[in-house]
Length: 469
Image (cartoon, rainbow, N blue to C red):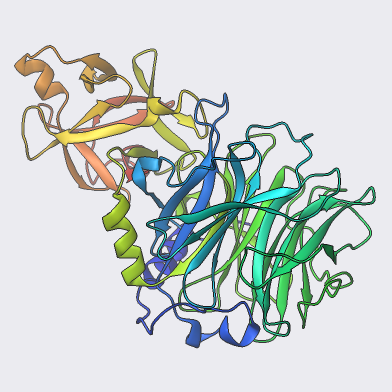
């Protein structure tokens, strides 16, 4: 059951109102990781990228930031910020942990491409003071078995006074989670079973509250995501602790559990691999101790372009601002439909249309918003992969065409942006030379039509869009 989209937008807006009280929780211990004392004001997401035909495959660390944890801005133009130089030369499944001293460590699977039959005992590791530079690159060998070492995550274990690195591997014919302990992410202990419930599991992630630890994972036997809990972080303490039913049936992996900035509202991200590869899904719950996850309407969240198997970590407002300042925001936008929020404006065969994300060539949906060709107070949409080509209307249909220098072309390609006809928080685009006509979709094709406040609600929704990344 989808929750009301406006309520989620209100929750997202409210999440940036919390006052800063210093760094986010520096420990994975329960007392320091939950409640008002752990106030933070933003998030960073780490990920690698893939697209349906692998045009967008980049097996390196990418970053995005968000003030509310729902809508994300890719950094560095959605290009990598760190790339492995050893092992396979690529990474998957990155994980970002804030260490006890307030700095960060980044871990990742040592794997490039999709050859999941590779046997590799190593993971990648970097240190970072601020996620603006990455130092001390190294690989950590976690075992000597002829198996994989996938989706590493880490936590601070106050009982041991060390960090635990846990990951997916298959030591005895069953995929389980194993753990190695380390004081510094340089020297590591030998492996031991961490979660072995008696059936194959994949992609574990930990979340901590004041009263318990929560381990979410994929059950490989039935394809569902589950949650287990324990009062300790000791190896095997989660084995009998599963307390949820399956959150989703099949096609989802790589869970992330994320608490909202300022309240007891949890989000569960999942990465789809079937039937659509490359789409992040989201569920929410007001009580992580219960089994009450509700799917979030796609209207309420976005994902970084081509993001796969992500990780999120809390930030302060100052850290959020510093990352935007250092890496910069993208030089392009995507344009999302209001009433079909899984569809984005693209060109295909030089026609402008809406298609469901993800698709290739993905640059068909990237637009540089430039000052209006006929009126600098307006906006024109220039194609990223066809520079010098702009959206224009011809006989009311919208097409991609090369600029010819004429005044008619300039006027046809210029729109005035205004608050959305269906939702003032979104945007609508009014034609400069047909000022009662608005950019809208009809049967997923773009055109301009006469619209206004008195137009049918369906038409106003067709003419409302979100500028996103």
